[in-house]
Amino acid sequence: MQWPFADPPAREDLPWYVAPVPETIEDFGLRFAWVVVLTNVLGTAFGFYYYGIDPFAPGFVADPSQFAIEPLVAWPVVPDSPVATLFIALAFAAWLLDRPNEYLSALAFFGCLKLGAWTPFVLLAFKGDFSYLHAAMYNFLFWSHLAMVLQGFVLHRISDFPVRAVAVALLWYGFNDVVDYFVPIVGTPHHTLIPAEEYTASGIIHTPGPHRVAAAGAVVLTLLATFLALSTRVKKLEGRLARER
Image (cartoon, rainbow, N blue to C red; front, side, top):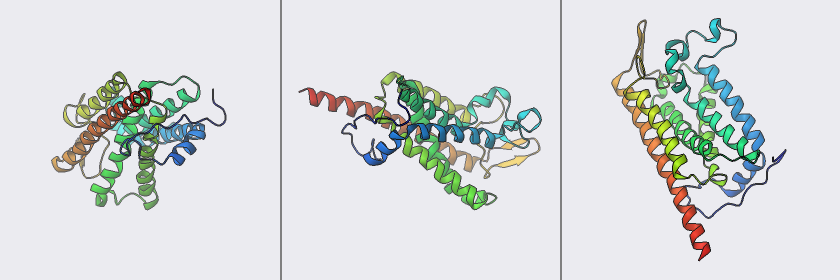
């Protein structure tokens, strides 16, 4: 167990597109990884509250909220960002406890890259529709999600992204894309609500234009995460083979 400060593993020589974060920032984050874990746990708690979990509300679910709208069976695929921050908290905690888990790391990478970039994308694409948000909340959502992308790009220091782990992450986030935008489990698609869509007494009307824009962003980011995870795997193996020669 690494406590209270962690000893960052050596950084391998990787192309900029799979390791864009400067080494000094990576080292800083890894040394204070317990703080990163706690921050993500708090972010997860806030995220579930944002989606509607409220211990002071009747039935622990606020109304209105997305959890109040969605059927219970769809709940596991609704809180995308909180689940992503939970994955990365667990991935770093497992590494700190000397029990690194490649599956958690791959899930965390996909989640932080996909949801960390999708949310700012949507906030910018439909900025006018988010005018109801206070400027402080808008900026909090925007920059905190970009921070998810940053920390996701540090995971290559503690993970080799084996193909089996990438396959599990792709299966989970690919399934999310399907039920979020194309074939819902029950009712209507389960993606995070965006104000550009229409809300009626009978439910949500997924307006084709905004729905397609949000779906395109999600699918592209899932493909990008797959490419980057497998590229990291390949470049690490190439570097190790070169050193053995």
